[in-house]
Amino acid sequence: MSSGIAVVPRPARVVPGVGEYRLTPATGLTHPPELAGEAAWLRSVLGPATGCYLGEGPGISLAIDAGGLADEGYRLEVTAERIELRGGSAAGVFAGLQTLRQLLPADTLRRGRVASGPWAIPACVIEDAPAHRWRGIMLDVARHFLPKQDVLRFVDLMALHRLNVLHLHLTDDQGWRMEVPTWPRLTTVGSWRTASMRGSRQHEIFEDRPHGGFYTGDDLREIVAYAAERHIEIVPEIDLPGHVQAAVAAYPTLGAVPVSEVRTRWGGRSDGLLAPTDEALRFCADVLDQVCAIFPSQYVCIGGDEVPTEPWAAMGHPDPGSLQGWFVSELAKMLAARGRRVFGWDEILAGGAPEGALIGGWRGVHGTLAAARAGHDVVACPDTTVYFDYRQSDAADEPIPVGTLLTMEEVYGFTPVPPGLTEAEAARVLGGQAQVWTEHMDSVRRVDYMVFPRLCAFAEAVWSGSGTEAGPGAYADFEARLTSAHLARLDALGVEYRPLAGPHPWQTRPDAPGWPRHRADREAELLELTKDIRVHEDAREV
Image (tube, rainbow, N blue to C red; front, side, top):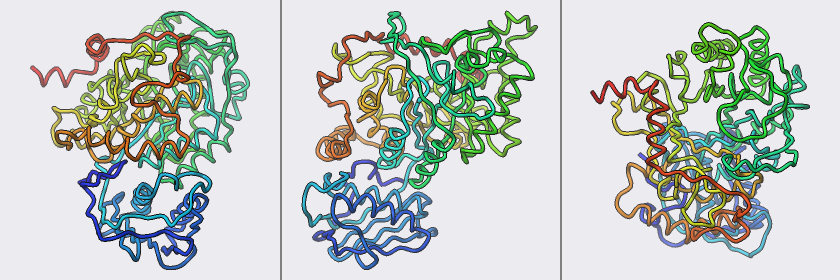
């Protein structure tokens, strides 16, 4: 059970001690060899801002207590004489180090020294562990490319908030971001487009400005290694068999229908669809070989969502409706042969997902319910609760307001396990994942605005289980902790978050119209979209 310390420590959940520990240049650090990486990380982040580089010696001690603490759990004890941190694993120790940083002044999160110490840490005892094992965020670098250094910065911000899975969406109709040496045109042609839409697609406004970029194999290996040092797993996504217009523009014979360019429009379904041919399967195998050579995660996401069947019908296939399931099955076999598990969005449940598939339940709660009831592991990522491209208020100055309203309070109330599941079914829900689709985020500044501080609320929800365990006034308590301390940390880290009162003038986008939706309309649409996977749900209601 989580103590609820979560992202922003709650004073009521901390057992206070007497006095404080003062961090000075004389403070030392001791640790066993298996925690050398965590010790090196702590020195690297504390030293420049405080002058305390933590040489070998008494002061702070790190240890692993695998028998006494949960795997990602930790116990932090601060007295006037010492700091002791024990974790159930190295990941637990690393989680405790985030709390230690939070107990220090915000200026200690800067990259250079702006104030003099000594740095006081209040005496206390904190014992904590996560409520959910999958605490993820999906970052779409296909619609708008984020340079490597911005991805690494995002990883650091995830680590501060104790998130442990970065789902990296690497390919889509609008861009292919991963180098595959045996298919070089994927990046020479598929990684850039001639124009992009400005604002919601319904307005048909385009900017004729090329956009592109891609990661080399070594770039991705660096991102994987950097994240692993911070106990974050990178789960790659290569969209197949749909959402492949960028790939088909590079290699037209792969497509069910020809396309002439990388897609410049936003939106879900497109003509970018693989043909059911040996060449297309060979392409998939080569791409997955490269993915598995770079990413050690047991999961590889193949998307499988928003697949139109009309191009397959136009090819004259006698049963176009069966081809999505066939493609997903073939991809799952390829991954199994490489020692990996297929991960797909909840559309792959239609007609039966492959055995052992992990499902991303994104269409409301329906995908999560259907997957768990069908015996699949599932990560809950319902669009109406954790899609960070959705608008943050109904105010007229909210930039590019699309989707349903999603306030920080609604994110804070997120519960990965929806009601109505049996105990065995609920155990199939691994946790939750927020989604950052970047059609309307063309820079890291726009990502900051849309993601923070809603990510802080999400992180507390999946770490402490705030959506189910919080009592009356829990959100008000969270907001008070956020405004009194945590926003200053984001300031120190240079995060250009959305102010709680609304956007700064320079964060507005009067030139980019949105397309807001009402919750009731979206819920009705979700019921229609998921009718082919809600068999178990409907039967239980009867």
